[in-house]
Length: 187
Image (cartoon, rainbow, N blue to C red; front, side, top):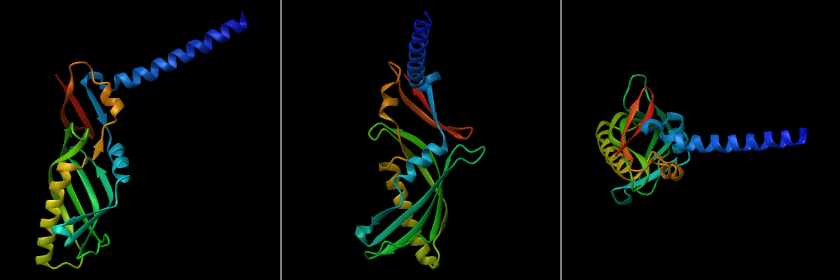
């Protein structure tokens, strides 16, 4: 009987663990929302940078490196900072400057990702550039940010998570609430 009790205990434990794993995945959309922390967004960006973007038909290259994600206390927008470098005529330009932006987030079903929405350039410092170049460089960076916001997600949702959307629901509003990213579901 002792052996049968142990076997029953092992089977029950295995069943409970499987149920917990299933419940954890199923409850991801508990209360019709799922949340992401800045750390999760940071890990996603760390895998994709540094990157160099060619602009103006290759005449200018903008390199973004070392992304840093934060949500300042009390804010409803994400803060994203990069080291930035600019090069011309085929040179990449080592990151010697800094840029910071604030942005909301939106969900794009085509990429299954969270994208920047209405990014606002907060800070742009490029050492060694004069006032005119700085203004022109700022325009290039603004153009790059708008393009990036349209096409590149900051974070891609896991297909397994998306497959667990409750019946009749779809991803709705994406907001930043109390220091975390919250995705709400709609009917």
